[in-house]
Image 1 (cartoon, protein in one colour):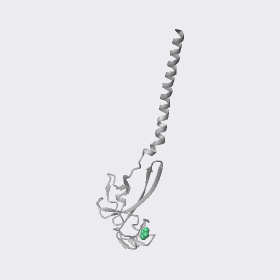
Image 2 (tube, rainbow, N blue to C red):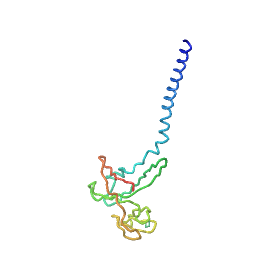
Image 3 (cartoon, protein in one colour):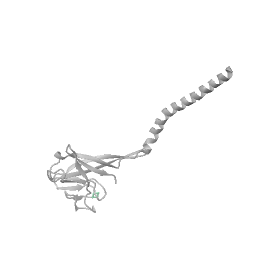
Image 4 (cartoon, rainbow, N blue to C red):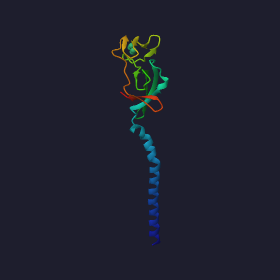
Length: 165
Ligand code: FES
């Protein structure tokens, strides 16, 4: 009688130890497994509103340069890409402006505004674009691209809607 009682007590301790051990293993192990596989499940943001500057800092008719970096997450791989452009304010109305992409439409070099030439100049193959982005000279097949959507925050910050293409 006392032997069978001892045996069942031993079995009980074994089972209990197994359950408690399993629970501890799960509590410790699951976060570690999640930590390891989470990057593979995550997708980098492809769209976002990007602040480019204060409207009050932009002068009418003077291209206002800006740049930003986007990090694309693809599994464990992170790729940083740089983008930029110029906001051209036309009046006191914060919605009355256009925003050009500074990537040359020929072979994607970065164009720079030249106050002296009153044009955007591309250093790679000497292209020239007007303040509105139209091709004035050189090999580019079309005008500079435009960031289509923008908005003004309550703090007067201009934001563009960026979409990964
Ligand atoms: S990349 Fe701009 S002119 Fe060729």
